[in-house]
Length: 387
Image (cartoon, rainbow, N blue to C red; front, side, top):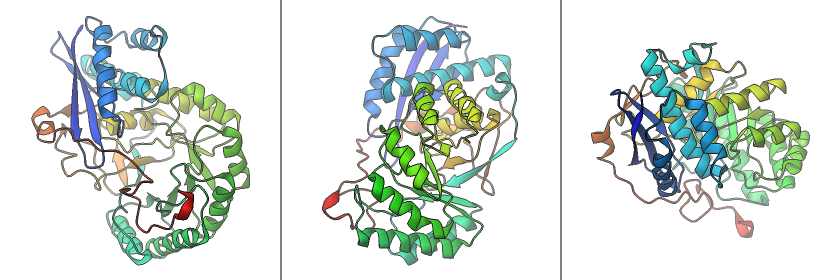
């Protein structure tokens, strides 16, 4: 079996574009992967076009050799563009191997340790404003069967959070907690925008509401500062979506800077690399909660990690608060039932692209500016002069 072509599909998906990959082979099998990179979709699509020269004519069943070559031979390696491109073709090669052997990918990796995974809802709060409306929307999430949800109540505040902004955020969290009751886990998102003192101040303000974790309280890049926040925080610190390999995670874990890690199977370089990260975290007794605001192919790949990793904690999921065509652009789209995703038994990743449906939603330029005037987070502008 030899790779004969690499095809890139971009698909508009509201606040970003999904980037899907197909690896065609002379056997008639086609493998799928995803390289969605919000706001940089054309960049990663161009990188994937460059990878075609390396991959065409090779046997995808020699996956390890190809990953080694793609991460050793080029002069420019690593980072979010290279790792996202690598992840897409790595997923597609796993998919091809599984199809060729007629087994799901998780079977190739030693079998699953669970047959379904708990998920938490994200993206449900876009467009709400007052604390009361936050509470009402949160109640709707619980009615859909979720018992965990993540949200960013801080608008465009930061890096120093002012009193009014903190009071408003606390009022939102209080309203959500009141609406959902004591048995629903609340993950609070910081989007990496606060300084150390503000992050610690926020963590203590969140503690009375039994927040499950405080995610990305400060920007990635300063592990000593993040470790300081973790030591002072009364709730768990979760981070890792903007780390790109096991090398980055080795430093994070050694610094003791996170209680929960969140590798993204797309940006961390694929399924095998994400499992290596999870295995390394297991040695520190740190659980893994894969990051996934991506499309349905990335969700299928994340489910492989979730199935195999013993220290899996919970999986992020945007559906049903995503583009209405999410389930139409692929066959076999993973769907949430009672707050859980089932581990599929279909060969490979268990999903197939529907190119004609993807073509109905062509690429549209979207900039993911969280803290600008058009931010999806801008419920009430209380950020002050510190933006």
